[in-house]
Length: 238
Image 1 (cartoon, rainbow, N blue to C red):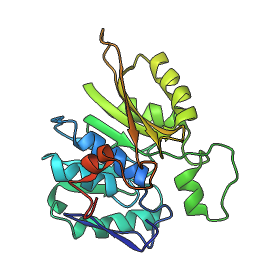
Image 2: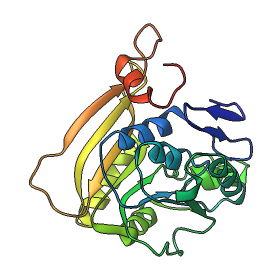
Image 3: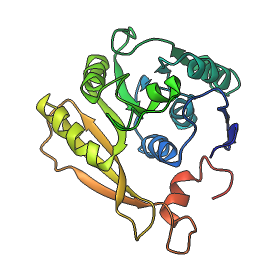
Image 4: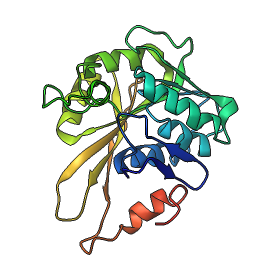
């Protein structure tokens, strides 16, 4: 997925000017939430990058979708992608710092694919650092942004490395959030879980959180049927 563009069934993501490109994990995040059958009145994507998640959600959710992206070149790229999409009239992205900017709305669903590598080796590319490292937005700050914009009955989804998802889930629970379900992602049957997607909400619930597992590729290297089924609405060939 390192080409200058990625063609989906109903839209194209140009990414040559974005610090972080389209990834399989981000596609899983978008497809999982778009396929949940939720009916939000408005959606927010924090750190919207290319606009990928916004368009994956727009393909299957008929509501306004906002994004916020601090990195200028990624913001400009997402604006181009949105302008060429079938849903340009209900998608918009703000080029702002989510820590200080108010979107002016509350949201029934918030999705985010945040920085991954806190205090690990940083790239010489400032844009990539903003996209991948907590020097731009810590998990604690991200949680504050989510809770500030989430409606009382709303829920949110976040993609994280599995080890960091445990920390984030604990932080969110301390703020009164509960986990609805989580998706544990493996590269193959022989690998451990390397990504976790959490679906959480503000309101307390007596129901036990459900856990699901997704294996991307079978032992022979081909896509698993579960992955194919999830991505069939989006990928041209699975």
